[in-house]
Amino acid sequence: MEKRNIPEEYRAGHRLDSSKAGLLYAQIVAETLELYFPISSLEFRVFRDARPLKGISQTEFNRLVESRIVPLLPARAAFQLEAVDSTTHPQVQVADWVCGALARYYEGKENGKRFYQFLKNNIVGEKELFAEYWGKRWTE
Image 1 (spheres, helix red, strand yellow):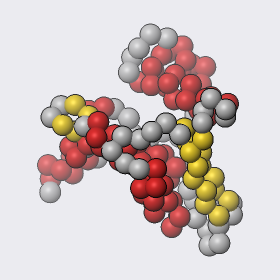
Image 2: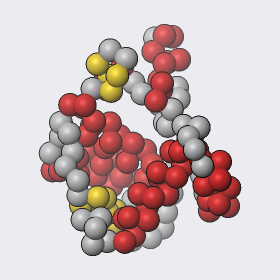
Image 3: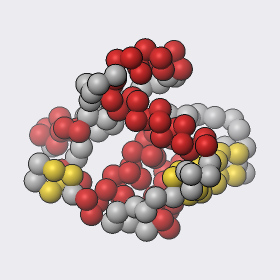
């Protein structure tokens, strides 16, 4: 996601409003998970790092994500959203490393191109979050 595309409601002037970072994170997680749909599986499990969220409780975060995902699931599908300690869950650590490597690429930082070359064959989809936000805002 390009930082310049972050909607105004998550900003304090030209900077990210840290008190709304948890809400932005919930939005990003939900939009990313929506890339998996449609699915036919009767189980959909989501695990995230248990680090504290700024400006939002874990209960509210779960409610926001669940309200976006459950309607997309097949009838009678089980949905699980759990916060886990990344220091004891290597899969969450790996996901964090991959996200960090891709961020380095998209932000033009050192080794970003090298990391992207290594990962690119494993990327199954991309979506620029909030890409339409500013265009829609000025046409409404």
